[in-house]
Length: 376
Length: 259
Image 1 (cartoon, rainbow over the protein chains, first blue to last red):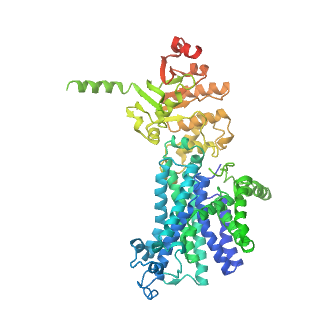
Image 2 (image 1 turned 90 degrees about the vertical axis):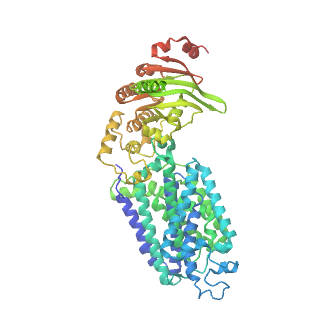
């Protein structure tokens, strides 16, 4: 019988292995610069994790998760930028006390929507609330009208493009194409030092593990099974008395919330936020991380993200012009040859052997593996 | 002034008579009237079978009752509630369950989980997050599984059931909601003879608490279960009554044999 406990035994082991990897092995084995890179990759893993819930379990493919990653990141960056733009830091500007790019764009007063970002608690709330609210609006507008599948994917992509254009176009309010740069301190704590980067890495890893546990909780609740049911036979769920749109909105907002945390941690660790993390290309790259990891595997999202980004870094250091082709090839390979990604390979080849080794029946925690059609 | 109480009395008297009253129901798809000014009434504890040639509008009638298709005009009253204006999920909550033509079950979930999802509790987002699989749920799932002859398959993935078992499972998913009106679209399609016999038994057993509308082509099966038969033709009622009456109705004979 499939366990409905919070986590099954093998899932606990899986989480423990991931935790050991990102909390112990990586910090001990790579230098500070590389660890900061890993930290950056792990912020993308939040998005991939959201996509596992939304796309893998719920069957809703969003090609615009960069929107929520970006909104979360911008919310954080706005707070950090305001703190870096204190009157004494900016006294050479014609209007001291506002971010430098506003001054360059002849803006003389802080716009109203920047005001809430003077306070850290407010910022932390808004980091989650703004993207989730935006996801709610998109979800409500689309899912109650029964827009789904490819149409939904295209619309999310369009929104990602629109948001990028808006951010680039409103340079005076958003920092334009350069984004929000030169972020220095968080409540007076310098985030640019090696020590701070170390601490932020661990905060980020801890938050990611927290999100993993939330994802497992949702997966094992009845809601998780309804998501799978909806992906398979939406009408049957609807005519069993459920409001399908409500469940879709929920999982889309959940994915947006995860992405937003990733975005905020990105701004903190990397020290800037720009529209190049909002648009179509990063959104699609994040779908590829999820597909490589296995779109039905919560932990696979983390492995997939780390692996693709590790490949990206090492390839683009040696063959920068070949990387994009490599990424495209990888995606095609995943879709054609192993639709359930690394997790699928693990389940069909490694797990049975492990089971033989330990003499135990392998736990059927991931019984929900549909074949093919990853684009649905 | 005098007429008003009289009307009231009439509708009060009529209310308990019919579980479902379909009146003047019309739906038109781009001018084609799939269902045209259709009226029929279903009693409590009745098994009604709707038959008719392909394209007669049988499935469309079920679609209209369960809210999948919106009526162009006419009314569908279920226990005096007007269904044509209700959302699909509130129609289900009012007590109408519908089985689709092809077995609509969740292949990736187990039989137990399929039934559990249909269990009428935890239907809101928050309710589903906090839903506990308690003893009452397990007991009810077990009870329904026994009714639909699947008590030994509870923890198998639904994908691996035979076609007939999938049909039963979907009927079970409706039974667990305890609907007052059960609508079954070709429940015995693809079933073996022995499975058909068992299904007829099942339907006769569950009738105690509810009414059933069945769409079916298999005349042997129809004779086994039907209390009353409604023959549809081109979106209209061609004939209605007991099986014997309908079978000998010259209009029916002409439609079925005349061309």
